[in-house]
Image 1 (cartoon, rainbow over the protein chains, first blue to last red):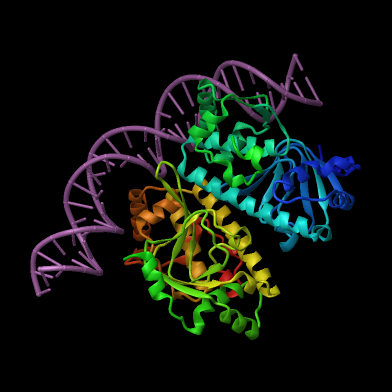
Image 2: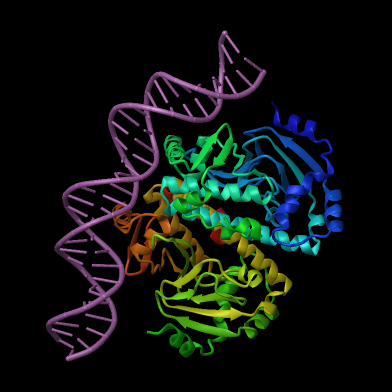
Length: 253
Length: 253
DNA sequence: CGACATTTTGATGAAGATCAAACTGGGTGG
DNA sequence: CCACCCAGTTTGATCTTCATCAAAATGTCG
């Protein structure tokens, strides 16, 4: 159950496919050659497995390499002196932890796992390649766009809309890296975590989820999300995927 | 009263000091040589004066140059289909409109003036200089950090804390570019604009401002902000300026 | 099985929204 | 200089959404 031990223990070589989701993600933005992909996989210095509900990065900790999600869900968050927590973003497979860390040498928020996660580390020098450098910049722009959308979500939308919007967003992001199965996907967030994300109480999240279920829009059970009527869900939650910058087959609903 | 006409009319040469606030801002992050500063001023292609409450950039509009605020307040915002508006950031003198525009060729939100504004445009090629390129990257990181802080503000803080936090933030930002006068500064936002920023109703903003006034923390009158007790204001609003990345004399309270 | 986290349900309370109207104050034109 | 206008501010009354508190039900995993 000890995190450090667990990480070391799991730092076995992960198959060559460890960056596959990352490549899928990146190729929504730029094209990489086979040679570039192979070279990049070769630079992976470290892989780690982290158990669920475990802190990976503490705010301000030095972090020069770029870490990439291989599998699992993690979240960025900040704590307030009152003990309240605001989750400011999710990391899904293929996402980079924080592109800024490669410049600033640290991350200005905490990152913790939601489900069990595997990560890979790319050393800074591996990121200088032109195509990849551009892609990372665009990925960072995207983080930005998502945070702004969350601000709008929390600021202007009702509980029902907020939940619907987050579920749409996550579904689209997972679909973009090939992690959906029809209209289903993994969704390991507890209602308490949803609450910390959407600035609602977990009780209200619960009641709103039931409302969505009774409206036959979606079911969220056993860490699995099934969206029964995506267009309707997008409609009631005001979700427009264009800010996610996904390539066409995934862009449209 | 017509904006386009007004812009053309005002597109006179603005004195060589037009980037002074921008340089003050940038030099919190990197050092520029005199030569670099002179060269940069020489590349300014356009200056404009825009009247108050006027849209400058509409979402998606092409915008390749980097525009910089010379004077005045402007805001970034997005509209929802319901007609509600969320302001997602403010631009004060010395700020760049949107660093991403120089890469993406467009801005993904609207920008409008709050008070009358002057802006300068720097063509893309002028930004390749190494020191400045780094600075722009850091400025972009900063936009990020501010947006995340706003998400926390709207998500987790009470009306009183939210208003106090925004006022502290703005005061610090203005002080960093030499636009404060003791514990006073210009603050041209209406209560309705504060409401759209903080996700509150303007009625509630009004009542909360009075509460702050009665608590002898600050006065906001005639578009002018006077913070009577900055440490106390920071304290009640949970404001920690470190995310603004300002150099030391302005860093501490 | 038993401990523990998570979900569900109920009852009550509070922060802030909404609606409506009066008041203020600066700017304009006569 | 005054009358007027319009935007913004202030005040009051009422309503809604969501938070909080508490406890029961369900599920999970060693």
